[in-house]
Length: 337
Image 1 (cartoon, rainbow, N blue to C red):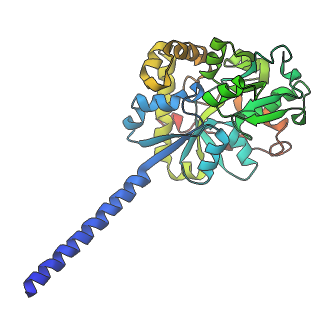
Image 2: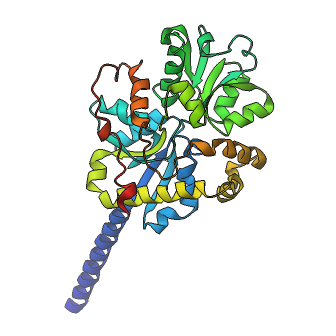
Image 3: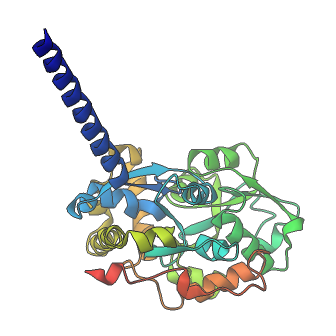
């Protein structure tokens, strides 16, 4: 009887040890996973995120990466600050805005040298809106209040002497919800990206008012290159996870090289089928978007200063504040290998 009890105790002890080890392994697995929030994963401006996954570059680097989608960049930013995700694929301008609020966030890979954003005007309002100087009294769509689209909308209108109080900004998200807002007449114009731009042009429901898909178009609108889509993380995370940060940056850099050495058709073939409900439209939109991507994941030399100029023009959080641009991005991780 005593031997039997002893055996039971040994079995129970072994079971508890096994459970503890299994729990530790589960915790280790969770700790090793890197979760990245994308500010609208189907947008072509953020295509490098899903493309990197589809090409297997995260796995090549030995990374376990989970991609999540949040239509508005400002919401993705909040997820990062809350510690719910380790990185965000969103607009670089958030790093500047956050620094003025005491939050140290930096871009470790830059995916877009220009915004890739387009101000579209509804054909119903096209007779009265010929430029951003005509938006007084109008309702303008943005992905979210405080998002990069709202920053750019205010700047473009301000360049024509139109104050923020002269029009209404309505958060309408992206993709289908943006198209619905145009169709329903809830917005007169709005800022969106591909493939939504091409979809609206195809149906004739909206026209291009300001085009920032190319370097020339962006320089005409904003006065310089405007680095936008990027992978940004909390500076403290980058400092304490240098190996992971370098692997992430390298994976994205490989993707940028792939984009610049392959055609729109070849790139589209790597993307999920559900991203391409109209494949011809998708490829056409992607072809129009190719000029916006960086070739190597590095920050354009004149980019940060242009972004700071735009934000300083109207954003009360940034206007008149000292910003150390060197702390808002780094090329070190992209160059680490």
